[in-house]
Image (cartoon, rainbow, N blue to C red; front, side, top):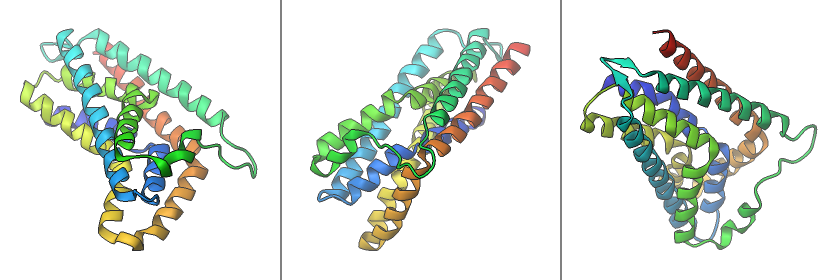
Length: 225
């Protein structure tokens, strides 16, 4: 099981380091239904990762991901393709960043966060975690990485749970800070929100470059085995 958990740790960190969901949670926490909506968004985020991760894991396990402990070629090719896609998205993200003194352009849906109900926050959290291209790539890679280790079903479930929990740390941190510190967290969360909104492209680019390089390296190593 240690091998499976080790394989998904960096992928989970890649999911956690998603600036826009963190910004969205911080905005929710400052709204009239702050704590309820922030908690609902986090639960939706975790559910989305769990559902997509489970589907990816079951699909990978059904395709014979390993033979006598050696990863199947298709797993290595999948990692290679996902790695290249991650690098391409990194380049696109960096090229689209705001330059000079231009304000970062945030998604239009963030303007309506103050009017959201907990149900809408939950659904949006689930959709954003499951359908975001970066998260989808990393979750598919995590499912394949777990399956190829050949551990039993229970250990696969634990490894997937670790991936989901780590992936939830990004939006989960503001929720936890707000719950513990209450109103005292407002200034810190506002500063975090401003910084992430300003540096969203840079953070996302670095994360994608690191994860892309790792996936490509894993894919090449698997094909060379």
